[in-house]
Image (cartoon, rainbow, N blue to C red; front, side):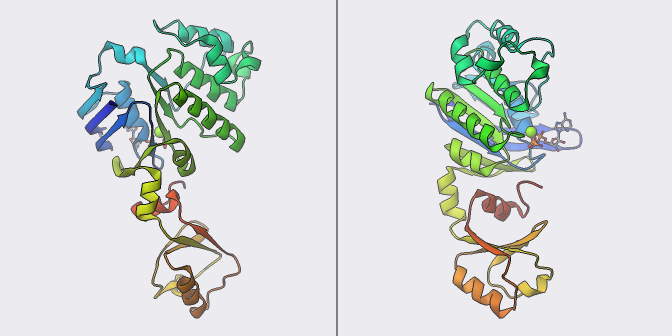
Length: 293
Ligand SMILES: Nc1ncnc2c1ncn2[C@@H]1O[C@H](COP(=O)(O)OP(=O)(O)OP(=O)(O)O)[C@@H](O)[C@H]1O
Ligand SMILES: [Mg+2]
C-alpha cells in the first residue's frame, strides 16, 4: 500500500516556480529521499505535502484519501529551521510537544532512541547543534507518527553525528514508520533510501532505487584532474567532461583509452585520481552542475 501519493504537484510563488509538476508515490514502511541543490524545491515540496504551505495545484493522497484531520495526528515533522524555546529544558520541551497529541510516543523510547539521557535537564540554549538535531527528531516522533518528514536532518553535523542520525533513522524504520527526507548528500540517500528522487528547478529529473539509477546512468569511472589550466588539452577527447570550481572531471567507460588520450594530449597527470562513478556524477550528468556549490 502507498502511504502517500503525490500527483502533478505545483507550487508557484510570484517570482519562482518552486515546485513545477512533481509526482511520486511512497510505499508504507519505506524511506524516500528528495535530493537536489539549494533552491531545487525540496522544502517547498514537503511543506506543501505537510499542509504548512498551500499548493497551487495537484493532488495529494494520504493512505489513499485526501488529507483529513487524522493526517496532522499521524504525521511527524522536522523542519529545516526551527527555533526552540530557549529557557525550557529538553525534558520540558519534549513533554510540551508530546502533550499536543492524543497519541504519544513512549517517553523512555524517545529518550533512548534519540540518545537524550544526558541532556534531559539542560536548557535548550545550552545544547550543541548535534544535540539539537536529535531533540528535533524526538519532537518529530513525539506523536508516534506513521509518516515522518525530515528536512535535511544531517546538514551541519560532523561525520560521526551524521552516522548516528542514520542509525536513528534505521531504528525508526524498524518500527514500521515511513520516512521522507531531504538531503544534499548522495551518500546519505544511497544508504538510507529505497527510492530517491533527484530534483532540480522544481522538477524531478530522475527517480528510482539508488542501485538501479547507478546501473542505468553511472556505470563507468570518473577521472579527476586538478590544476589543469587549459581546456584545449581536453579537445578531441572521446569522453564527456566538466570543469568544476577547482578541477576537471572526465566521465569514461574506458579508463585505459581515456588515459591514453590524455597522455597523447600531453596532459600532466601528477594530481590525477580515478574513482568509480557515484550518484554525484549522476547528478552532474543530468543537470550539468554539481549538487553542492
Ligand atoms: N515563501 C516563498 N516565497 C517566495 N519564494 C520562495 C518561498 N519559499 C521558497 N521560495 C523559492 O522557491 C525555490 C525553492 O525553495 P526551497 O526552499 O523549496 O528549496 P530547497 O530545495 O529546499 O533548497 P535548500 O537545499 O537550500 O533547502 C527557491 O528559489 C526559493 O527562493
Ligand atoms: Mg530546503
